[in-house]
Structure formats: C-alpha cells, structure tokens
Length: 324
Image (cartoon, rainbow, N blue to C red; front, side):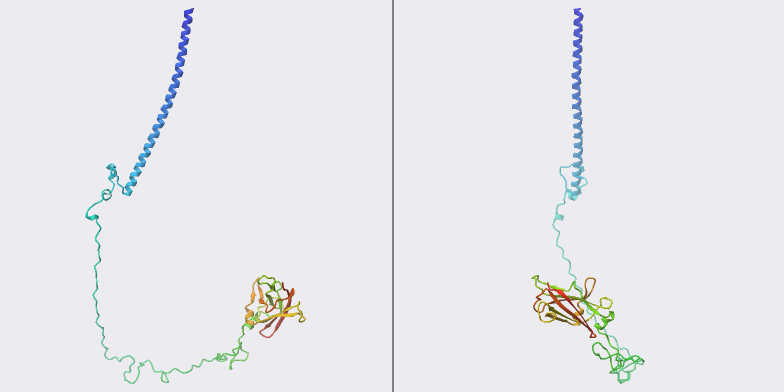
C-alpha cells in the first residue's frame, strides 16, 4: 500500500509540474509575439520614411535642374539633361565684354531743282485784258452792270398789298407803332403779359410766414418778413407784377391812429417779380426787410401792403403780426 501511495503522489507532482511549465511557456510566447509586432511596425515606418526621403531628393534635383544649379558631387545621370553652357560655362575671348559699336554717318546730298518756266500760249490774251485793248474784259456772256458797275445806294424792301411795312425806328416803351402802321398795334411789356394768366382781385397775407425775425439771437427784433399772395376771385394764386409798398407801425408808441410809423419799403416792379415763388412750400411774394431805424417797442406790429399793377390798379391789405 505504501508503494502505490508513493507512486500516486509522485505522478500527481509530475502532473502539477507539467501544468506549471505550460503556463510559463504561454506567457513567454505571448511576449515574443508582441515584440515581433513592434518590430514589424518599426520596419513599416522605416520603409515609409525612406520612400519620403527619396521623393524629396528627386524633387530637389528637379528644382536644381530648373534653376540651372549643378551639383558637382552628383552622379552622371543627374548631369545628362543640364545644358553645357550651364554645367561648364565657356571661358575665353567670347566671355569678354563686346566692343562698342557706332552707327555709320549717312548724309544725303543736296539736290537743287531748276526753276520751272512754262511758255506763254500763243494767241491767248492775258486774264482781265480786252482783246481790242480798250478796257477790262468781261467775256461774251458777261456785261458790265448799269451805271458804271457801282451798286445802288439803297435797296427798297418789297411791298405786299394789305400788309404794312416793317418798322425801321424803335417806338415808345411797350409799343412798336410806326407812322404807316395802325395806332393800336403795339408790343406788350412783361408785366402786361402776366395779366393774361388771371386778374387780381385782392391780396392775402400769409400769417404763418409773416413775422418779425431775430437774426443774431439777442432777443431783439432785427427786421420784418412779409409773405403775401395775389389772388383772383376764385382764390387762385396769380403771377402778378407791379410796384410793392410795405409800411409798418408800432401800436405801443403813440403817433397816429395805428401808432408810430416804424419803416416804409418801396420795391419796384422788376425787383418784386424776382421775389415771386410758385411752389408747394413757397407761394406768393416773399420779402425779408431789416428795420430802417429802431425796432418795435411793443409785442405787435401793424403792417400795410399795397401792390400797384402796370395798369394803375392798386390792391391793399393789412395785418397784425407778433414782434417777438
């Protein structure tokens, strides 16, 4: 029994030793495989770097060839495509500076042409001469004008039946009548031509734009701004021309029924027409009038506007405007 027991124990130990050796071998083989994988990876990286280095070297050689740079240490195939003048520049007399060349002097000879003379035609009289020798020649189809060739002193204008002749002397202002023309034929003036647009019946002062203004901002009135519109019977604006007269009174100062007179402005017709506006924002006659003397003492100013047209008609209006 003891012998069999020892044999069993020995066999179990051998089995246990064999199992242990198998585990160690497996671990060793695993480590070897990992190292082999690392070696393969490093070999791949080396091959890739070598291929990239070859590409860079080939590109460098190509750029040198394009720029004409020759590497004396390079191999023969790399020097085959390089021009001889670049690889080994010629030396000798040809490399010296070329001699200076001067253009040849060329002078053209002076040629003097002989004077050209034409023979006179035989049997032809000179220009302007009479064949008989008694005066200027006019030719068979031309005859001297009557009266010795002098033009008439005056040329009478043509006349038509029923039509008066044109005027030769200026008439009075605004008319062009002559002694032969009818008395009622005359030229209209500019003021008269404006009356064809409409007839003035009254004047209207614009209260929003008629006021005293303070130009320097010191609180004292510096002048008067007046805007008024000539209108017809239908309250339509009329383009009017005429002499304008504007009078301002100070009601706070005694001196009359309207107060003391402050200033008076007389604007002739030609100047008044230049102040006429006919737009959507500005209508009528616009005047900016500085005070001729002292400013108004009160809070209001009384103004009177008068327009005298070319035919002598007068139109008047008045208003009270604030002074401050």
